[in-house]
Amino acid sequence: MMQFTDSHCHLDDSVFSEQLPALLAQCAKLAIKRIIVPAIAPDNFDKVLNLAQYHHNKPIKIYPCLGIHPWFLHELNDTHLELLSEKVTQAKNNIIAIGEIGLDGAIIKRSDDPAAELAKQQHFFDFQLNLAKQQNLPVIVHHRQSHDKIMPFLKRYQLNRAGIIHGFTGSYQQAKGYLDLGFKLGVGSTITYSRAKKTINTLKRLPLDCLVLETDSPSMPLSSEVMAADETGKDVLTNSELTEQEKHRVSAHAEANAPANSPVNLSKIFAVLSTIRVESAEEIARQLEVNIERIFFD
Image 1 (cartoon, rainbow, N blue to C red):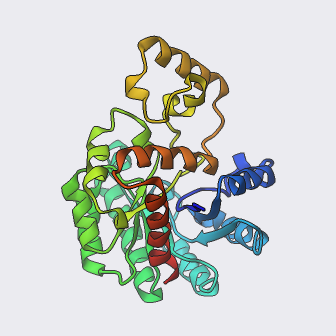
Image 2: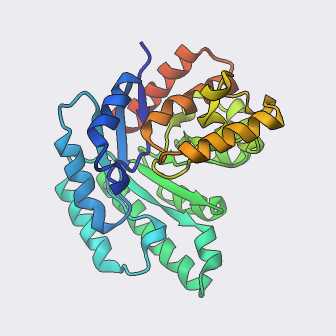
Image 3: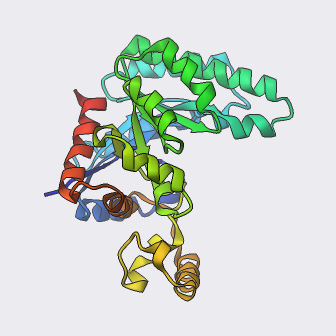
């Protein structure tokens, strides 16, 4: 039987609080057996850790990661990096990665002082990569308009356990650069949009042993066509084949009924990936889980 891991899900988000037991039960029915939850800022470190502890020995395993996301640096300083280091040391036997960390070029461009913003993001990224190196942990890396800025840091640290490039979008050459350093690529909702031709074509060419699934829920919604595929009676990846009338109808349906993105949508992302790849669904599912094991549990 196929089983799945959501390698990136912000399950600690308040949008999930009331529905969490029902949501996890639904995940179990869809054979989603593991959910990896990265922290984003010091104020959610404990929540992420407690969430995983609460669900210990439940049917679905929840694995926490600790890190500081580049979106949330405005009020932070080195004291918060020291706090992260202390938390990681204390929780070393419970966490499985440093994340979510990275560099965000869009935030830098919009900043009132781009040079200062870049310097601060780089400082936090460098510290956290060094922490991962010291603790022999993989990393979960956020990128946006920043492949060229991220790569020199990853080359410098040459992490033994590498990690995941979260929500990968980019060219084959960019992907190959990460693979050469031992990283896996997170495959998420981007592939449900027919306009994401560059990323889709890249994922067709890459070896299957470099990919993992993710939702990034409650962020990164799937395309309305894929979310409403059941309404059309068509296969998940036929959105490019829908008539204009069908596209309008499914888009309206999705907007009227759109919940927050959630880990249950991992099954839809998997269905799309299975259409992109030449391997059987069973082989894809098996290898995706092997990839997760190699990153986090070997």
